[in-house]
Every structure is written in C-alpha cells, then in structure tokens.
Image (cartoon, rainbow, N blue to C red; front, top):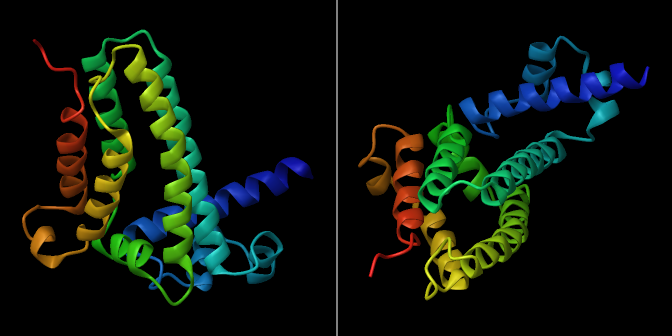
Length: 194
C-alpha cells in the first residue's frame, strides 16, 4: 500500500509540474490534473488540500532536485569552466518547456500567496547556494573579489524583469531568456586570467 501511495503522489506531482510548466498555474484546474492522472478528485484531495499547496510542493520538489544536482556539480573534481558549463546545462534542462504563462503565474501571482511563497523559497535556497559558492570561491573556483550577496540581489532583480513584455520580446522563448540571464550571471563570476 505504501508504494502505491508514494507512486500516486509522484504521479500527481509530475503531472501537475508538466501542466503548470506548459499552461501556468491559473489555467490548470484540479479537474484537469485528475483527468491527466486518471484519478478521482477524492484521491487528489487525499494528497493535497488544494491546488495552491500542490503548486508549492511542485516548486519545492523542483528546487530540492535542482539543488541536489547543483551540489553534485560543485562537489565534483571538474574544472571551473566544466562546472560552470554543467551548471548552465542544469539551468537549461530545468527551463525546458516553461511557458510565459508559468513565469507570469509563479512569479507574479499575488492573490493566492504563491508569489510570496516562491519568493521565500527562492531566498532560502539562494542562501544555501551562496554558501556553496563562497566555499567554491575559497577553493579558487570563482573570483576572489565577487560579492555573492550582491550577485543574489542582482539575480532577484533580474527575476523581476523576466516578466517584462519588452524583455520577453527579445527572445524566441522563455527558456532562451532564462539561459541568456544565467550565462550573463555565471560567466560574470568565472575566474579572470591575470
């Protein structure tokens, strides 16, 4: 029974993630998630009290998975350039199939409290990442003179402009926009040759 319960929960999370990435949070209903999972609404509500809590769980799951992969990269014996390329690839893979609706809903949705949750969860994970980056900095992987708190602040401000229609028009897809932003930030912290 435990395996079936865990499996059903994972199916709901995976399906919701796919639907949210494709259509955003607002457009996807609990009914659509249930239909895609081939489960009843009663089964859905055994695992999640509502769509907002499901979205939060999806977001946290993605963050935790990404952070785990990030740590594998930073802990590896690869060169700094290989690590940066791997981090960019990780970011690229994480942005596959993200729609403009997803970006708008997850980063701008204020009515449901999702925006504040995303902001808080992002801040928490960035504190961990900044700690990891400082550790890598002490090992010579990143520039000695980079201020990672400023880097974090800047990345948060950049996240705020990613919904700007003027910015969105500069790219073929939200993924291209995210990858360009990541490249700009990541290669800005690469060690400089003297």
